[in-house]
Picture 1 (cartoon, one colour):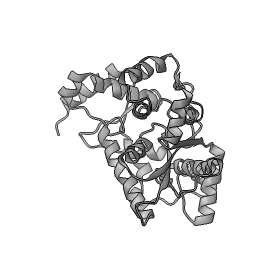
Picture 2: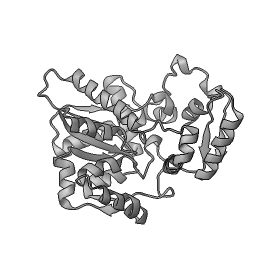
Picture 3: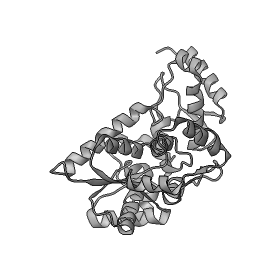
Picture 4: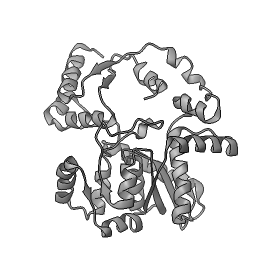
Length: 307
């Protein structure tokens, strides 16, 4: 996380909130969240939930703005649009897949990755090879520094004929052994039947795109959104996509001031509601990358806290 993102989280000091920082990357944190949630008794006793895309409710909410975007840019129901989505965990674009399956007239769903290009590799080759934490690159679009996309399993379930036993084998066993390959027919279905295309973006691409969009349109975008725009442009040229492409915006540029300054020569303006946020006291507990340690901390925190 950038210093601004840390300040947003660690500045919270409400008695019912405990900020935990694990010794690992996003994938490690998500594995711990899944492990905690997999303990049914602990989950029930402590009313554990998740608000990221592990939770199906998150995807349901995201489906809505695909529909909203479509209605805003079209005049007739026969028109089609495409979406370019910056992604690492395959959550937001999974919601796009669901919207498309529901009947929303989406032409292409464009997967935009950064240097952590596991998903781009799959949609180009049919090979899904998650990386280890050590192999995951730290980039200037950090929310996409993910090498094990949890929601990809949901799409693979549709792609491979909703065969639960096969999905269990692939993601429960094969992924742990290094990954798996799908056959040519499945890869073609991902493109033709489900509309997926993909591309990747680098730090240099992000800087160039931020600068170009700012100079050409007077709009300042964050690095993740820049990944989406860059990949949309590249895919449009590579595959001849002829429908309008909506690039989903990811975050406020102010969260990534260092990269923005590198791109345009000055830092983004800080919205009034965030004035002084970097000066706030930090409240965070460092824990090892271990589900048992996290569960112990949660139990202790609940027992000593009155809200």
